[in-house]
Amino acid sequence: MKAFDEAQLVALVAQGDSRAFAELTQRHLPAIETYARRILADETAAQDIAQETLLVLWQRSGDFKPEKARLTTWLHRVAHNRCIDLLRRQKRETPMPSSDLFERQENSVQGYGAGGAQDSSDFFLSTAPPTLESASNDRAAAMDAALRKLPESQRTALVLTYYQNLPNREVASVMNSSTRAVESLLCRARGNLKKQLENQQ
Amino acid sequence: MSPEQKQFERAFEVIEAYGADAAKWPQEERSSIEQWVAQSAELQAHLHVHAALDESLENIVVQPRLNPEIIAQQIAAHPQGISISQRLLLELERLTESMLAALWKPVFAASFVFLVGVGAGTVALEPAEDWSQAEHLSFALIGEEQ
Image (cartoon, rainbow over all chains, first blue to last red; front, side, top):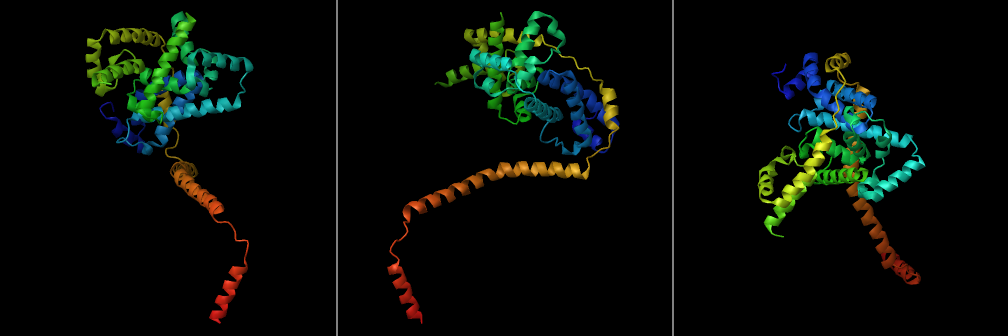
């Protein structure tokens, strides 16, 4: 199975080949799980989304068009859409406490810019318990907190580029955006991280 | 702005967006940016600042916990394909999305033209208050026909 390329494996999955599916799961599940965990900062929800994403591959592999995208991009897009849906549902269902509203205003004044003011999903991430293994050391904990405070779109662009190692065109495809827009998000994300880390020091 | 200045600014932007690791820069621009960095102390300083941020980002490690083998077995136990009703819903959703994406412009254009037409008609055509001439004319026409 390892000798097969991904398009061949997906074609086999479409015919119900569970060994081909196991091979694709081995290759892609870890990346999709870590992506969802970095976006949601909720281990259980992230694992659910990773499994749902692979279930989509099992049940709707015919929807994947290898001439249009790499499988990893397609899977990241499926996972990304589910993460966004979940964040939006949480946003609708959870009323925002006044103290956090104040904190958000502070953040926007301290240099979040327009993106920070638009996106309120950072509220859920800033209050979520830390799930990252390396958060034990102070520097990593500070960076982790700064990352979780980024607006969702900036964090997504950064995670896809930096941690998932997707090229800019594929990041744009996952986010249903343009490469220029992704670059702009990345600039803002890195600028915000720098400012937050400076403020913490 | 000269082409050299443009290229310098572009190199600056790329480092600001993608960080100091050249492997993450857009492939088609990588070699030219590397040349620019080699020639410019300002770009090297910029690269140094972003290398520090990259290092902080690298400190955050997330280890996957799911066992791919078990998950693959669990998922493969599900029936493949989706039910007709699910497929219909999915297709309906896609169709609605594409229609909404494709239709809003013509609908907007038609509404705009209609409103402009109504507006122009209201302003330009004042109703005739004296109908006697029109009546006279119509009677004359009817009379001629008869």
